[in-house]
Length: 199
Image (cartoon, rainbow, N blue to C red; front, side):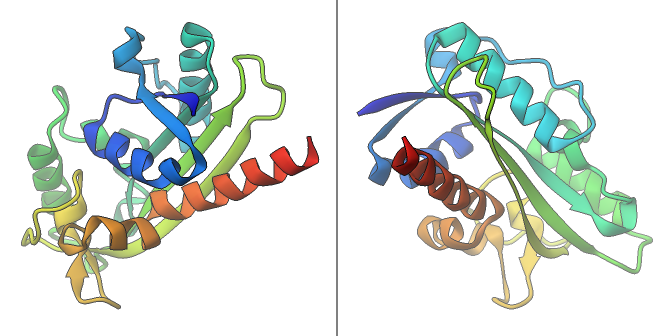
């Protein structure tokens, strides 16, 4: 089994990545288990932050690294919370406070449309000249009433009109099929397999 360091200590993300990468024989290790501190995320785009996190984790561990930077973008708020999604309501990071602020900020808006974004970056090493980069989106609407107990982040308020449920009402396996992170990881896996076949 190949070891892969995940440049995150988010328990929800770790669970999703472990489930999605298990068939490829990857042992996903969160950076915290290796004593690696979180990287700075000073950039304005998901891709730049994900690349910084992947290189940081690979440099500290000597292992291939996978990083994601993800968040939610509300259309009426010009893409906010965006890269600040995890700390939208300030420090310390708190899902309840973040959701409360987003709903308040959208309360006067006619458009409650939003989309999750996931940028994934895989590096073989800190100086990998060809990092694999994927960015995907998952569209829905922000609703004031929380529904569902699965998921994390904004999932309980992220309503999927086509399914009539929030992301937090989906079973984990179903969410992994359609979510921004599931889409991104499947695309990344395809790139990893393609790279392996060319080697």
